Each structure stands twice: as C-alpha cells, then as structure tokens.
Image 1 (cartoon, rainbow, N blue to C red):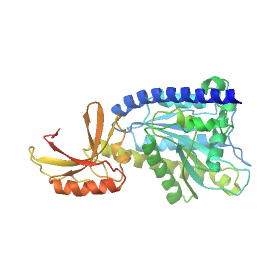
Image 2 (tube, helix red, strand yellow; image 1 turned 180 degrees about the vertical axis):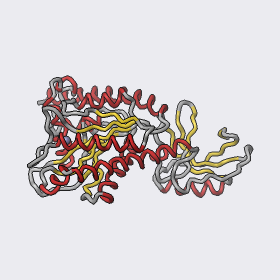
Image 3 (tube, rainbow, N blue to C red; image 1 turned 45 degrees about the vertical axis):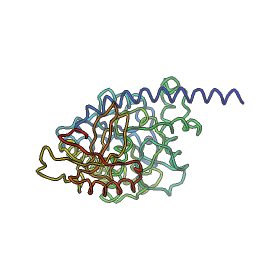
Image 4 (tube, rainbow, N blue to C red; image 1 turned 90 degrees about the horizontal axis):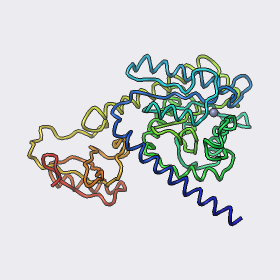
Length: 363
Ligand SMILES: [Zn+2]
C-alpha cells in the first residue's frame, strides 16, 4: 500500500513537470504570434467504431459530424478570412490525441469539440459547454469520464495517454493540475456558445462547466467542448436528429465563433481593448506625463490581456527585466490615477500602485 502511494506521487510530480515545461514553451511561442483569429478547428466527437452516445434513433457520431460540417460551412461563407479545419469529415475513427495534434500542428486559433450528452435517466436535457478545469461536482466528472472513454476504442491508448484510466476518479486528480494560459479565452468562447444556444435557440441552460477532458488537455489554444443536448431524452433526441435542430445548433455555434472573433480582432487591431469605458484621452502631448496603475508582474505574456483583466480598463503592459508588467487606466493627473488605484485594489489586486510614463518610458 505504502509503495503504491509513493509511486503514485512520483508519477504525479513527473507528469506535472513535463506538463509545465511543454506548456510554457508552446504558449510563449503562440501567444506572441497571435494577432487575429484566422483559423478554427471544428471537432466532431467520436466516429468510426466509436458511436458515442446512442439514442433510440440516432448515434452521437452522426449528429456531431453533421453539425460540425454545417458550422464549418457557415464560418467559411461568412468569415472568408478564416480557415476551417476538421478533425474528421466522414465516419472514421480519430483518436483524442490525434484531434488535438491536428489543431496544434495547424497552429489553430480556436478549438471547438462538439458532443451529445446521455444519461441513464430519460429526464435530463439541455446544453452545457465545458472548458478544461477542475470538476466542481460529480455530474461534471461523469461527463468527462464518458467522453474520455472514447480512448477505449483506440489501439495505442496506454502509450498515448500514459496509462490514463478514463474510469478512475483518481486519474482526474492529475488532470486537475492543468492550468491553461488560455483559460479565460476558453471561458469567453464557452459563455458565448451557451448564450447563443440558450437565448437564440431556446435550449435549457446547464451552464459553462469545467472538467478534465483529454481532448482539451492536449490542445494549445483556447478550447471548448460543447454538449449540445441529451440523446437519452426523447424530445431532445428528436430535435438533435432533425435538420431544423441541426441547423439551429450549427448557426448558434457559428454566431458564437463570429462574435468571439469580432471582439478579439477588434481588440488586436486597435491600441486599446474592445470594451466600453476604454477611451484614452485624445490629443495627448508627446511630453505629457501619463499615469497608470500597475496591476501585477508576470513571467509570461498573456494571450489576451483585456479578457484576463475584464473588469479593468485600458489594459496595457511594458517589459522590464524579462517580466511583463501589466497596467490599467490612463490618466493625465496623479490624482485621478490614485483614485483609480483604489478601484483596482478593491477588485482584488491588492498590491497595485501608480506609475508614470513620459514618451512611453517609465519614470
Ligand atoms: Zn461525446
């Protein structure tokens, strides 16, 4: 018993170290190159010998493929600057690892995995969108277990996932160490998807959730997994199996993508973030001293700083001694900056302080 625990701990540490080293490297490289959303991976869950959830009439693998293709078509038609990448475009088996590899190899900007839910009871229905994270309840863990069980159909699963057992609750403790640099961006996309499915398509809202999905864990870009409804619920199965239902869901996914892209692109094309109350003072003299509130230092650059500090305004950063110092606000008087510093502190950035710049150089 004792020996077993030690092994487990050792493996945990090793796993964690490998994960961190891979992660820092990949994210650094990609965060710096990313200016606009120009590619998206649409991942149709399951396929081939893995049918996914099975309803009375429909199989998950068929519904996800149809909706994936429709979503991709909407994006191609309406966002001609975006490259749509499918992990599969026919009824074939693709491993979870391969799906993530496709996204990483193509250096895609976003990853959207489409799935259908199922429950032992016919009662539950509705939509939920997951990002990679620690599950907060048993139900979310069950969804992750069910989706990760797809690896049982794979030939190299033991090797590809380091003996990960999708049915063991313990295995998910390791996945909980995962901290994605893209978590906020993933949450933003997930919220937009839920919003579209609930407000525009009228699906029941089961919320934005978190759990350890292997397919999300292996991707290195903002990634979500959307459960578009329950095949175990007869009414919802009928909806998902109908052309109308599929069209509604696909157009909702498209609109969520488009809105995310518009917000992201706008922010990256202009100096400041794409949110309201971000107006910088106009006609500032080059020699004018500008005051900002320093929020915190980071060793890594954020991929989308305005989303990260959503509740603050005029987010900017400067580099100093290899650190990225993030600032909020933009004022021409110290008094205004002091005032705003109190607001920033009240939002939880307790070590915030006021700094000044002249000609872009910190004084
Ligand atoms: Zn699935």
